[in-house]
Image 1 (cartoon, one colour):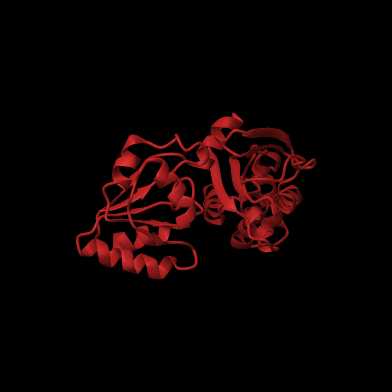
Image 2: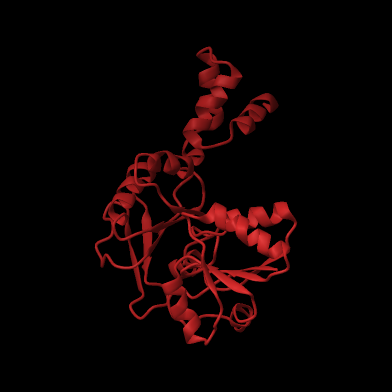
Length: 262
């Protein structure tokens, strides 16, 4: 059996009885950093072999783990903190387990994005985006989510948060944000501001940034009126749908159906 085990994101006491039981019962534990994981395991007197499983060896390590599982071993996977597979290694292994027909499960526990969302008080639905790339590709990613009616959730590092917020402001406009730092630790910090102001607090630890819902652009644009204007200009229904889809973030196929139903 493969176990994907959530581990504390701050306070070491925030681990479930089941997680401790599973970690103490498996043949070995795959982890991102053996030194970081050893601190947690020592706190609960868990003495199991550790193997490296991180983003640089994830594909090869996944194949090795699948082979061990097929040979009857029980393996736990943990990240440095939180839930494996959420902006941490794990997803490749899950897909491999599905393909191989290997039994697997999740051992519930902390997740930074869930904690931060609850702390923000913002409304559902929410969309988790994770870490933005550190180049202009970030703008393209943000543009995909600029007009959806959803709270947006990002992970940021201390060295990227300023540039990340600047790009968000550039694409999303000025919205309220909640920046959560050091979740469940002694100096946990919850900071509300706007994208135009950015974050002026302590640049230490990992950050979760929540961007409050904006106004969906379709609500501020008369879609039917503008579609008709484009058709009157000589655009085909397909091309008119493409233009409005780009402006509103609405699916082109939905707009095309809307045209044909009018």
